[in-house]
Image 1 (cartoon, rainbow, N blue to C red):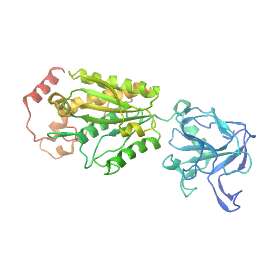
Image 2: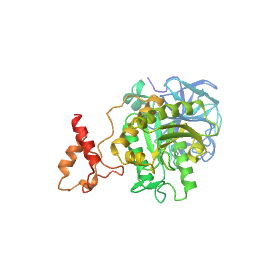
Image 3: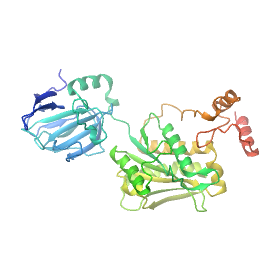
Image 4: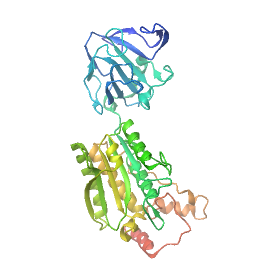
Amino acid sequence: MSVFEGYRISSPYGLRTDPITQVSSFHAGIDLVKSDQAPIPAFTGGRVIFAGAGATGSGLGGYGNVVAVRDASNRLQLYGHLNRVSVAAGADIKRGQVIGLQGSTGEAVGSHLHYEVRKTFTPQFGWTADREAGTLEPGNYLIEYYSIHREEDLMPMKIVVIDPGHGMTDPGTVSGTLKEKDLTLGISRKIADFLQGRADVRLTRNDDTTFSADKTQDLSARADFANKLPADFFLSVHINAGGGSGFESYTYNGTTDAETDRISGIVHAHVAAAFTAQGLPDRGRQRSDFAVLRLTKMPAMLAEYGFIDNAADAALLASDAFLTEAARATADGIAEALALPDAPNSGPTAPTFPDIKGHWAEAAIRKVISAGIMSGYPDGSFKPNEPITRAEVAVIVAKLLDR
């Protein structure tokens, strides 16, 4: 049985004479015909990342009313020239679900469905000037897709963007050797590790590099990064200062939807519990006009993981064990709020600690790290030659006594 059963193929994938320009060009999709305004079911499940009139220059121009679906193989499936669309951006759809009606909107000659498979979904919805290089033959693609993915696998992972605050020439808050930009990156990496295999996690930065040295441009680019995916949730990670203590979180102080309040409330509760377990207060959920909250188009939250200028908070922020617990709590909250699948593993992969490579005690250090008796610093180092305090000895002995 053909994957296009019930359709007549009016123009296949490949070179053809363009029916509008009458010039030979590469047809990057396949034109399928049922009848005008016939319901068009989705060929696979996936996430709708665009539904509406394709704008010129967007990668969807000329297709009229179009539905773009990101599938489980991270390809973009495009349904073009629709009379109208029947789904909305952000919706998860299943194979066979009606996404619109056959039509002739856009640059079309006669009523038909233009179905196209692009190799990627970003940027510009996967559009490339070399139409052949940027697309796949739709029939062969669907045959292979059906052989790989079970029906329950057809939904793509939820996209979570973690935004480590500050970076590059902007250190954020600073106290002694602690820098906000290092702490936020460390926490963000740990959150991403805990969500590995459960969500498609993207970091706005994975090192000390930011989008721009200009702060206004950088914040706008961080939000734009999440909007273009489009993400299901955005979390900006920060460290507070100003003499207070404990954990607090923020959502936008303008118009937000119930889903933002629901998700942020769940995540806040999980992280706040990690702080109150250490005797630090839950400062509650706040609202503010932070740029990344104002500019993002999905549920978004900014979290302040303690006060760097408070001695009790700073002691915890200097503890890799606490940062790991805070990250675990954050990931647990996100997983609950977004109904993510169960974790395929128990947590982050062990850090490599490059500063112990070749050290005379490397084997012993790796042994105690693997056993969970000792850990490193938020910047990913172990600092093997640093002196140990009595408090740190007490922590180590307590871990041994608990075994």
